Image (cartoon, rainbow over all chains, first blue to last red; front, side):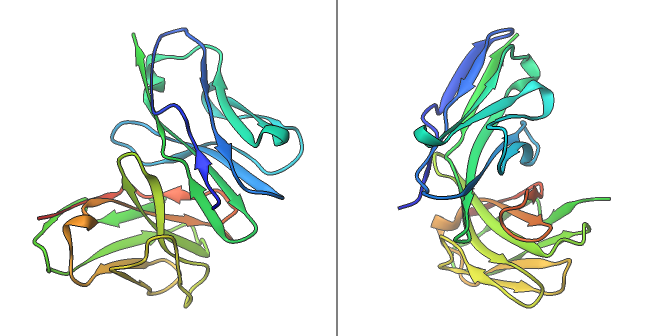
Length: 112
Length: 113
């Protein structure tokens, strides 16, 4: 079955540490990939997306993600996290079969 | 520009009661969606509407009905609530179809006793 996996369910980091959150998908063929973020008490908002072209995409607030087709991965990175990055992060994938699947989410806590 | 709005923000129901969750968007988007968010399970699509007048089932449609009242509004109805429907419900919209960026509402927390 088609799925999106986020292997890190909870991550705790100190400010200024580097971040990498894993995301793997099981679709074959063309796929559109997204990272959404949900800050405490707020609704989900788009962080970045990949449709085609340069596999390294840059999003808001210094986040970036790299699409590696051979590994079916779309990992999220940030060189230096801030306390304000504390949030839940969701990876999502869409293929041409009208399926838009979200991962289970990763809760990030950044310690000041 | 309010984006996507949802009412109510919080609701407590008894098993067997019915209720309708309301969603509206002011971005002139064609597509609208209802998701539920449960701990450890991410967001799961309940129903979606690709355009005014059409609705389709998502991953977990059982126990729910929807109405796309017009281009702006997309409601979700629980006819006979069950404890398994305790969840946070999010409405979302996108401009054309599901591959586009989705814009989410603030969510409705539903507790079914």
